[in-house]
Amino acid sequence: MKKLKLKSWVVPALYAISLGVIFISVIFIGKVMSTEYEGKPVSNYIPDSFFDDDENDVTSVVEITNETVNHPYLLEGVSVAKDFYDKDATEENQLKSLIYYKNTYMENTGVLYTHNTPFDVVSVLDGNVTSITKDEILGNVVEVTHSTELITIYHCLDEISVKVGDTIKQNDVIGKSGKVNIDKGYENALLFEVDFKGSILNPNQFYLMKKADLTK
Image (cartoon, rainbow, N blue to C red):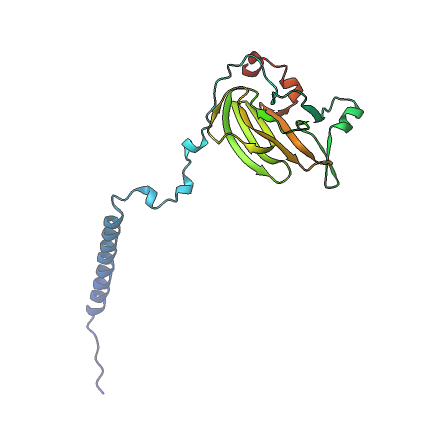
């Protein structure tokens, strides 16, 4: 059988043609991709979770105009069932301020008020309702923001008279006292807490503060 031999110029020519085809293909694909994506907004290709929504981070607050702080109730005869746990108090008073729940003793971070009948729970200052939640132990909880540094929290509510976003005045009704299942249980109770400058504040000290103390 006769063998055929390629001429010396054929192989280099085939290499040159192959390289040319690859080069043209790359250029063509690049043009197609640039045309397909051109003009499309970046947000179509980057998940929304990568962007901060500044509007959702803004907490609306009101200016404190009240000269003094009121108690979170108006009814006479409301008493203290558990006082704030003060680390500087006597050992006897500290023991009285411990909350017992499911074989555990906890320091009371507010003041627990009770009465023999349900009573209205009111705002201690002008403010905005910024949170309403339900706690397994302490029932309905309402947070009122008075400034960027001051939040008051009302636990153990039964009925709630406000909604998130409401602007309320001092002594406006927030809700009704309710049941709390700590210690032996209380039927008509309110646990009141104060968050001032990022720390829990003794409500008994809070009641003595003036407008100047809260805004300086």
